[in-house]
Length: 219
Image 1: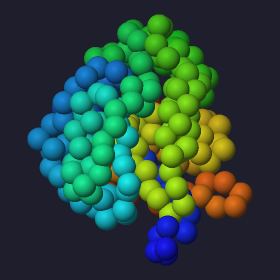
Image 2 (image 1 turned 120 degrees about the vertical axis):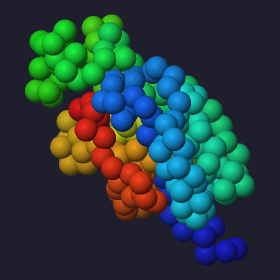
Image 3 (image 1 turned 90 degrees about the vertical axis):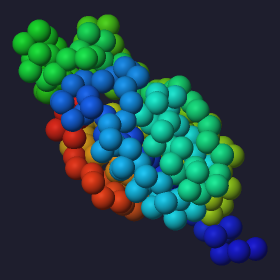
Image 4 (image 1 turned 30 degrees about the vertical axis):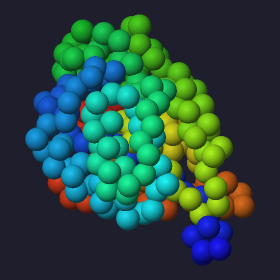
């Protein structure tokens, strides 16, 4: 048996590369926007870097920006890529397609509530972070069931959904996760390892280059 086979299980939570909406400061939510040229370059760099962590499989949101990023890792690692719609970004309701300025002007009370840390539905008819945590936790929990000792799972997802996954694994409520972790930059990742008392964060906002925190990341 190899040393890797008896080591701790690991999870790498990877955010998709930049999109034109990210670059323009537009709320995407579940809009299916493609990677920008910069995002494609980010994914190309992240692929082999994340593959070097030794994943046995990659599970991805079905939205194309996350799927394309996950494909880069799976291809470099030579491992399967599985889609799971539960790993989608938070649905931001009427905010989707708007800038932060437009959201603040059109939804002042709701936006102020979010900034105060209240978990209200985004954009009137969108999701709360509690909604996101519930579906992301269900998905990650299921994919972990088949992960053996020493194996690594890559989760290719989105900013808020990725933080929801990491917060859930660490046992943090979402306001604490936002305060402690902050945003996950485009094509950045966090690595967690499992110990006797639960999951531990090993790295956060690691990148292979061309990455920067996204100022439009919703809290």
